[in-house]
Length: 394
Image (spheres, rainbow, N blue to C red):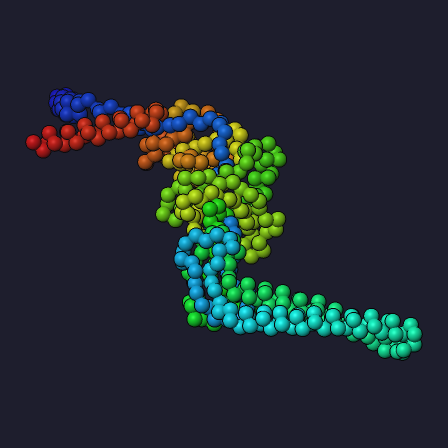
């Protein structure tokens, strides 16, 4: 009897427990939605961003070729000057006097040559009748020849004096913008002095010298040889100015050095840029984007799909079989816009996860979709959660 009562009580307790736990269990959460991009091969330009410096197309230092005191300065500092334009005038009084002295010496030599020639002619007639000795005749001929030599020497002295007088007007050797003047009227200048009077630079077209590592050049040449990279029709260069803006005119690569700098292991490349507005100034630091070639059949992965692990290695998450997450270790070459050129670790057809990467683990089952759809779903879910929270608060 007691056993039956105990059995009944146990059945009642079990029924009560079942009734208490009989509430329906919540369904399992759906797999997280992720945005994926299906990778494919495409052509990509190879662009290198390199440091560079602007240099003038022509540079000339204005220096005195004679010594003297500057009398006048005939140009505007910072302005444009033309080749042959007079920039400085040096006091020419000493040089005018030297020229007059040389011209007087020339006239004296020319007068002497007349008398010596006449004497040589008379001695020639007298030596024939033995009126003078042969030695006297030879001396007369030699004196006449020396007089002619003196005339030639004095003519050279006159020309040198004229050249020195012309040097008192210092002219621009090239056309271009002239900088500040380091000497003012009244200053004493000397031939061969260390400091130039001013510097002229031609900047309507400028050079941009950029440096590229020898390793990058070797990699590019090997890729071209293997057929993975094709050459473009002339290397184009685009400049980034110091304020971050893009220079509106493209440049052209002219040549590269034939030797590697042993200190830096880099090669200098020189490009030319039109500079009609004078925006590019000599000495300016710029960044040059050099289009070296075209990589064929490249895999371009969005940058938001590539991350770094704790060891600094590039990794990517892809959707594998049965929509499970797989982690791949990849190698990237360079950025092309907002994408990386992937050289290993990914292949065409892989579904790269670019959205919904938070808290994902390898092996997690996910629901792949287009990135925009995933973002819209996430925004909708967030809005719904906020609405529910506000309703509970009320």
